[in-house]
Length: 335
Image (tube, rainbow, N blue to C red; front, top):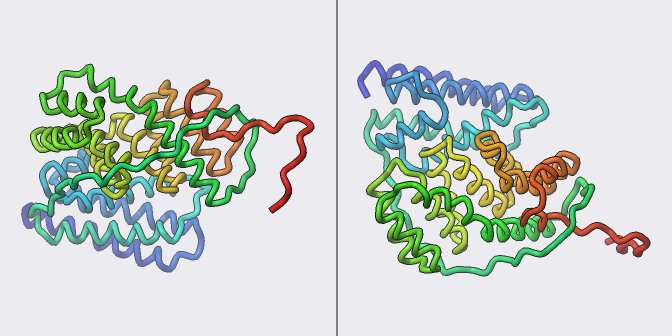
């Protein structure tokens, strides 16, 4: 980055710093949302100056910086999250949380760190070997429910989230079959075959090799994220799947797979954002529609959830819905 670009980036981040300071003083949700949007806009301008172009915005901009090794993986993840937050707070009924404020601070800190390096490469990421496998809860059959209470206990939430993700694991291979039809390098074909055969170690080695040889492809990171999630290494799964989203933001599978992980991490509000993106990219994807319905049930939005479940039709996602009460059956005693 040349001197004028760095000065422009610093000027933009000075404006972002002012917005973050205003965020700390914001008393109303509306003011806080406006400050977050302004902060992200200024940070984005700073990153554009770093990249030397104003033609890219959002995730394509972050992907470009990541491919040029000007962002570390951790920095990219934080900034992807902040960009998603800036979109989310535009909804008139959204009230920014303490976590949202902390994320805005973190995003500014990461952007400042990037600019202060003056265009020098960020620290890369080396994928770790997944931890030993754990058993997911098996999916259970259930009939649709016309409504769901607006409050859900945390223990029930986690139980349902695990059932949802377990069901996703059963059908997830269908999405990856799309990739199998593409012409891909030998490492990817070897990794897919090993994964299908249950040989995770060979699969991980093959997909890591493919990721190194083809850094612009999301597919290796989709598989690595999925394997890490199935092995219980949620930190690594999060890193790999966010990398996949950053690399191919127009691929509905990257958003759908990240959403399933976020459900397992008890973050349905953010999972909803990524299911929305998957559906925008492929409106007819029944898996995204069905699990969007499950996500909305977990958020207590039963009426909207039932619309998505109706659009999706029958499928494994119905495992997230409690059974319909039998007429005349005694009610459960209060707790």
